Figure 1 (tube, protein in one colour):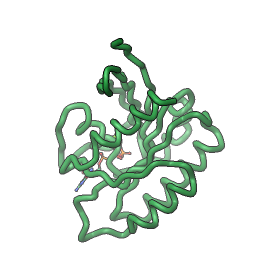
Figure 2 (cartoon, rainbow, N blue to C red):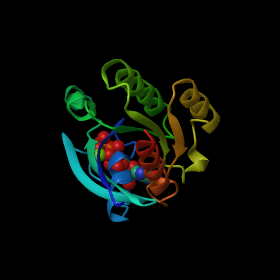
Figure 3 (cartoon, rainbow, N blue to C red):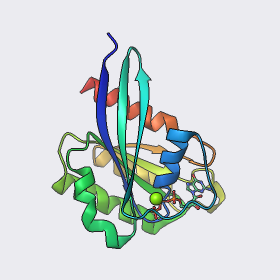
Figure 4 (tube, protein in one colour):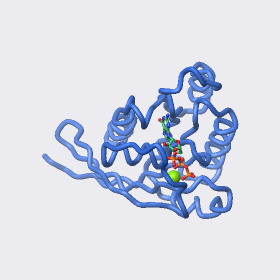
Length: 170
Ligand code: GTP
Ligand code: MG
């Protein structure tokens, strides 16, 4: 049968980690070098076919600026999935990602599928967060982990596809 499953998905992470860029890549297949910082949050939707089923993602791209932190629960409460994004060239963004994971585990829905995205994987020469460190952290915290690049598109569809598969299994 061709069922459509609606799934609310939220992106969380530090300013400049690349949340909007990942969404723009996934939804429109585009990348811009000078992506503007998100104000409040932005909404997108995109469907993904997995075998004979379709997942319709309702995506909330939140703002990383601290002044919007208090809005975040509106977006992660009731979310089927969350993508916590950091920038592999920015250790502070990895620290911020771990704070988001803690907040999700404390205040979110225990059934939310949480993915950790180490973004800007194209910038290997400027890497500051070892992939192994993030992978170990993800394993210890029940997340799944991928390094992504909104710029080159590496692992962008893949991370959403993996979320969709897990949603359909659950
Ligand atoms: P806020 O909305 O302020 O929370 O930031 P954000 O997480 O949405 O980051 P955004 O997508 O605006 O990206 C910030 C900057 O990083 C932009 O200049 C993007 O072009 C750049 N950027 C995003 N993803 C990548 C990537 O995968 N590789 C490279 N090289 N640059 C990226
Ligand atoms: Mg943004």
